[in-house]
Image (cartoon, rainbow, N blue to C red):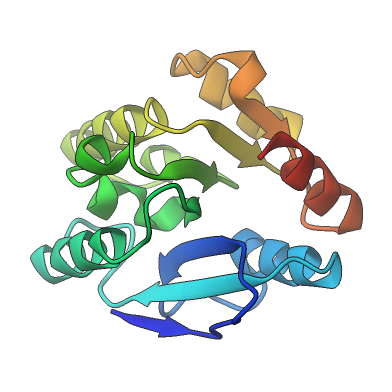
Length: 170
């Protein structure tokens, strides 16, 4: 695990996969937040996200343990399965918001057993979030079907308006 793009004026922390594509929702949201003047420290996790992997789980545990009490922490959706076990211990200490552009358990071609395991991990992790930022109504509807309360869902496309909506909700 490494902190990259560290900003000495950071007010937010983002935990994300190290290999997250440049055009992903999480990376585009980082750019929108930075354009809005928000400092962000990125904590890039190794491992095959969203697949559950022991090395990724260890890196996630270490990343969360190093964050200061009260920190606002954005969790990129691909990391949720590997963070699921760590979140309950840190959910009172840290202020979690997930950035979710799609639910990984809904991916086509997943065997039923794998989809069910991912669904349970994502549902449990999302239950511990103060907010869940989504780019559109379709993702919001899927979150509601998992029991995420509408008041915790923030419609935040990866643009200036979305960054403003997310910052207002934090």
